[in-house]
Image (cartoon, rainbow, N blue to C red; front, top):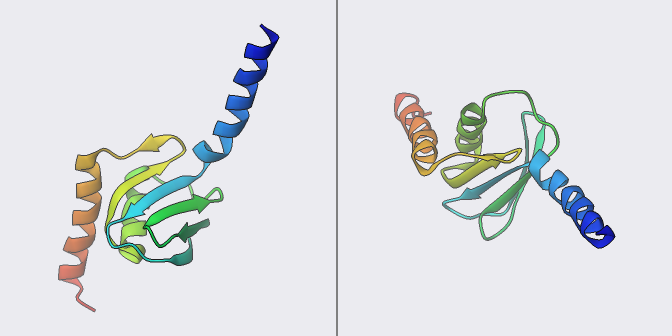
Length: 105
């Protein structure tokens, strides 16, 4: 019983840091480091991005749109244990494309 309790406590401790951050996967992989809205993003050559830090308080879709606006389209986007669905990711990426067409600069 003690072993199970210790294992459960360890699982909670190891899951907490991951659930408090954010993650995304770029469709066009590139290595980049960026601070966006108070969150430090680090993207590796495989396109996997990890966001550390509290960031500003905003809806998940808005954070995705701001991320896509600076980094490019994504295949996944998640924060604090919540992930956008495939349809929401498509909406996030499409919002950036619409903005680019209106403002080509």
